[in-house]
Length: 84
Image (cartoon, rainbow, N blue to C red):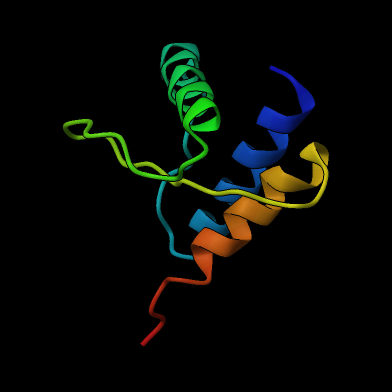
């Protein structure tokens, strides 16, 4: 697993642990599918969700460098959580 992927997975699992939910594990198959979708979006110049059944996704774009985007995307996603 590359540094970007490890950073994203670790950031997700750190936040999940605060809610006493089990950690995620890495899926090469899901990562390949996500990369295909990301390349399609980049080519189209759009952000939109894929219509995957039973699979959640976070669609995110950053103006920061690639290395910073893994943790930034996770923090952005988590900021949407309603903590009431």
